[in-house]
Image 1 (cartoon, rainbow, N blue to C red):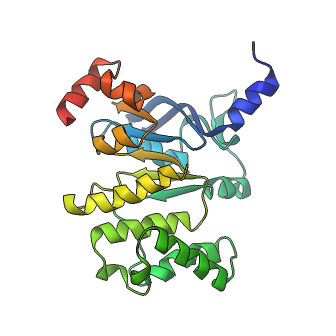
Image 2: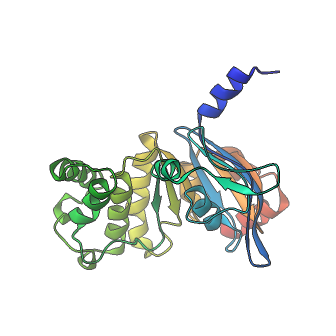
Length: 264
């Protein structure tokens, strides 16, 4: 049996730990006991049919949705757990805000502020939330815009950008808060096929830099080539989670195999 010390060390090496997470909207149970562990530096692709609970699970990890029961920890620190009476309990608000700040979220539809320039979109949160001085926030933003290949767009408004450029700005904006983990909710699904590649290239570069990433996606090529682990969800359950190469060779479950046959 491992010692409590070794167990604590193992948990500390996890960037995300979700155990038996359940979420209901009215009479519909969207998440039915989902459990998943994501190690530091790992890229996990979550795949599955529409309506399987993938996006809801992602939103629960950074408190955009409140779980009904289960346990969620970020970097070894508990975000929410279930007490002896079966009630979900979140940590106090100041701690909750600090934990949520450790996760960056990139949405399907960009969610940029249309009245702010690209640069202003990037410096807003670091200044308002982290108290970063404007000069330091601009320096950080310029470095990130160079990273995503959009230095020349820093003074443009979002309305003057292509969809792929908007999504790369959204990625840079999330990175501006210097998160420990990046959550991507189908980041290319709103893009034309020719614009998808530039966003996936940016995400590949993040993966190469050992950024911990949890990606809800229908891009099977990305999942195969970039993800360390592929997790398959269906009807609110996490059915299978296997190393990417193994998953595409044999997902280990009939429903996952039928999904792959359809997608590929």
